[in-house]
Amino acid sequence: VDTGIYTAHNSFGGRARWGATFGGYANSDGNGHGTHTAGTVGGNGFGPATAANIIAVKVLSDSGSGSNSDVIAGVNWAVSNAASSGRPTIATLSLGGGAYQPLDDAINSGISRGVHFTVAAGNSNADAINYSPARVANAITVGAVDYNNAKASFSNYGSIVDVHAPGVGVTSAWIGSANAQNTISGTSMSTPFVAGVLAVAIGNYGNKSPAALATDLKNNARAVATGFNSATTTLVATQW
Image 1 (tube, rainbow, N blue to C red):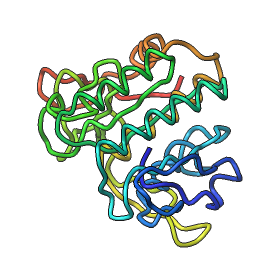
Image 2: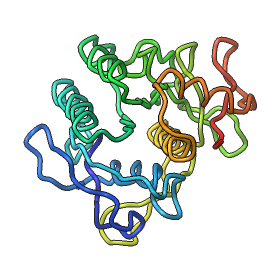
Image 3: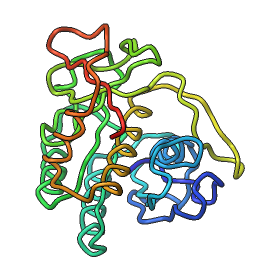
């Protein structure tokens, strides 16, 4: 749920498709952010879930901005699509804004229907409890560390964060050509990595409830993150 996906990128190997667009935008990723996050989920050479099907739900403009109403519509579409397809589904949201209960409610509704949600903690070096959808307790809220497992300078923090993942200098798919790539940083990058880890776990062990899968994620994570305050988890996501 992002700026869309360049579905023809070679790293997707035909596994990416367009799902829906909300906001009146073209059915394409003119930004790159959504393509990058999709690659970090399951692009060959970039992300762990290289057998997953990847569905673009565009709710952000090519400048990367959007409205809460469009994000909610995208979340609701993803949840409905999961129900109609009958397939295990992870919705990953590398976006955020101020606390907004209707968005939180839409995500909680999706979780109650069995859809897994990974959401970015945010990049304001502040407590994630003040941001939506980061503050959704039943979602998996993801902070960012560097490759030494130290807190990314920008990463939000706090007790609402469930796990961290690499978010500094992450290389993934990009727009412009079928082999394009870019290296960028943010909790936008760490969040889809966790989505990919969850997808692999579902493929290996079968689907579970969102709560049970989140517990598995945390039970298999490593308590190695440094630089966060005492209220914040030290868990770093690890494939199991």
